[in-house]
Image (cartoon, rainbow, N blue to C red; front, top):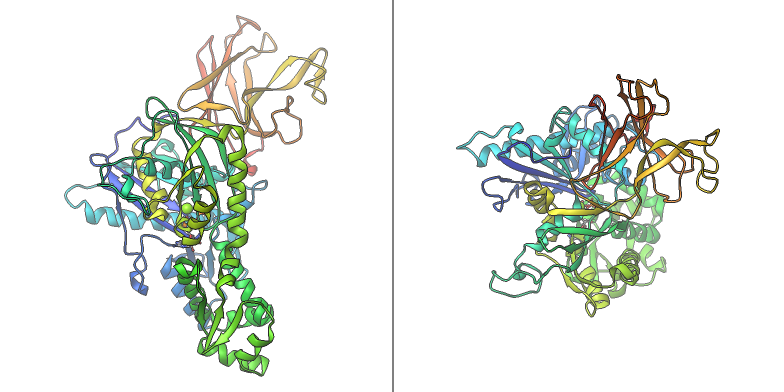
Length: 587
Ligand SMILES: Nc1ncnc2c1ncn2[C@@H]1O[C@H](COP(=O)(O)OP(=O)(O)OP(=O)(O)O)[C@@H](O)[C@H]1O
Ligand SMILES: [Mg+2]
């Protein structure tokens, strides 16, 4: 894992597996800037898009049926024909890895729309397998003069920076299951952080390729060494924020641990559904949705269009009342839709000429909570003394294309920070991920999200080791930290420490790695300290007694970490597999 640069590849291929939409992009090693994407997602169903919904349909036998727009269309047809019961349809399931912060293991289950469940690992793997295959077909079409096999490709999969280690490992394993790369060749797959990838994309973009900026196409942003900027990735599920500083060698270092929250664009959709339920009643809407799923789908598509348009900033917004809605309403409520809307007493909602109309303010209200959460979070960050001198905000991710969100940002922050949104903000992550695959070490320093270290014996200290295992004057389970949470770590370099065996006749040593979010933990039995991995190091030559150094090295700063131990007497070596998924920790 430490060096993805060892082998020569012909191509970099990246997958952005989003909460709402997914896509891929690739470019040849020989022409990294010529990034190619499939722009024809949804062509079977009348769309043309660079991304497709992250939706998976599996058969009753749990076999893959469809992904993306196709999955939605096929599932809606199954629903209409009442044949959906034995199928499995999943959408917006990536958030499950974010929310299951404490309890993530390989056996975590996802619940399909009809309530049936399947292991999340299988759903993620099916989705990744499909995206890989689709991309390989596309690569085959565009590189007809050169055969490119999957072993010739450095693969990149992006994950939110605020995901914990377990979620990142989950994604890696799903990629192994999907045969994107073999488990025996982990270096071929880079797990990249979404905002970091977007950062690479934004820094190199000519000024005139940001919304509302002019220039002749050759001007780049003025970012001398020391410039600090924040990448704010506003996606469907989360807002994910990374802060970088440009170094004198033009690489960048992370200066603040990744931060953010579950304030994505889908929260606006949820507010819209809640409003409709308020007007017509939740039970009525639930029944309508299950009786007329394709019409419900049209409601949501029509909302998506309005959400993206300038009418979300000002002007009233109208939604057509569809045929079956009228019929269903008459049957279930005994009156027409107009009566329900007139009676509902919800300010800003009225009926006019066959449309449900939301007043000027009402549409903005649907955005309010999520936009306020984002603004308040950024405001708090700017008040942090380490972040007061941020020069740029780069807004990326699909939700950043929202005129209303852009306006809110400019109003609140443009007197303090230059707010820039690249054209096609929703593609910044996947295009940046391709750039990251070409130059993974352009990020030179990261902030460690937690303390990492190993268990060792240490002279007992009453203050630090309280509650630890005390034997004579020794604490047997001291937590020796190689790095603390919040500390910067240099990418690609190791941190070493030398330990010695406890007993002179010892022929093996257990190297046990622990992690903790709490820097005050000094014994491995302290609350919140998690065992992450163990290995046994052979120390066959006991001639040196207790004077036999064991060198342990942590490689930090990559998007994942690696630990190695060497018995310096015999040069016997061991690698510790770091296991962030709970069911691994059975050591
Ligand atoms: N022009 C627009 N105006 C408003 N919202 C938009 C616009 N374009 C896309 N969105 C919203 O952005 C969200 C999708 O953004 P994106 O594709 O970046 O998310 P994602 O990658 O699926 O999610 P995440 O990064 O959280 O995993 C959706 O909620 C979509 O409705
Ligand atoms: Mg995204």
